[in-house]
Length: 493
Image (cartoon, rainbow, N blue to C red; front, top):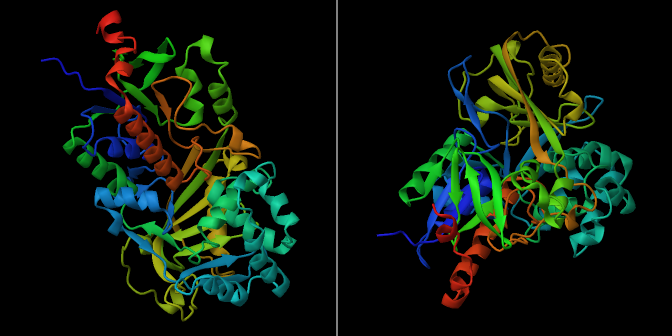
């Protein structure tokens, strides 16, 4: 008996593609077949892990942070059964070090609404009183519509709304480059406004940060394969989609790996790919279509450089330390974050030998630290030795004069295509899920979520595209289905 179910192809097995496939395979509604196509050997996209030959353990290529306000991401992880493998800071607490080496502790209580933000900022010793007061005023300057400031870069928006140069350089710049992977003078202010509304200036109070306590592959990709396979999703890795065939305002076929796929009259495609992979899928005669031209404007990537450091003897470091006015932005205590307990470090052998009373402010022993530089275009061509030296120097800034810890191994990871660049004006270029082709849908980083290219943006975009496709499938009448050219019958299969 012929299988007359519509086939829903999801192209791209990153977070957005996984979210699409999960939503479309939930059951209920019209029967359908879901096919997930991924060019790489495994799912996960840029949230990837690797096996490290130095210690035999699985590590993430780069450190990702979560926010407890990531409602879509947390919903996906809940479905995958891994939400409990996230750990959130309560209170939100981290160290920030400025260019002069001053180390300050920021702590924001989470259970007092906006009073938690007020008290945390006012107690933060890393900024002058004038700068702290200006930071609190920015909440009242956030426009109701983010698009109202999309023409501005984030730095200009902050200046226009009374932020001191000190507050921008020592606090906002680090937040912006970490959230958007771009410096403040190159990214749309609309994205900053969205980030602030969903984090520090959330109506319910500041949101905290979290981190995965297992490798990202164990958190996302591996349970996704198990769940989707159980639901009958056809997962095809190492199957790049290389060309779309377009007839009568719809996709009638595509190349998937070495196979030519002919699209049936009710088949659909969701493209959950990065913008730099989008244009090449279309025939030359379609590259001037507005959708493709707009996506092409978003095709410049912004890189991230991560340097994993292993020390022979344990060093002591906070869980998370941010560095303002620095080429390295963060140092993460990976052993602590992954729950790899180490013996207490003797005080005469620690990299630093002081701590604070807050539960999250302690310095903990670790043999593995990770340094991250976001928006790291200027570092891409630096040699590994230079980058390792830069990372070690950043770690040593935590304790000047106590820099005799011997490095046993280092791993440099360059993610050249980490995130798209979303400059001022990006809002008019980012596409809605439904496109000019009747059976083509768009998800992923480039989707119009209002967010920068974060994990939450990817999952939210995937859920939205799948939801709109679901509505379309359920609304189609028999007469509408009869009006679609029957590509399988016309072209054969």
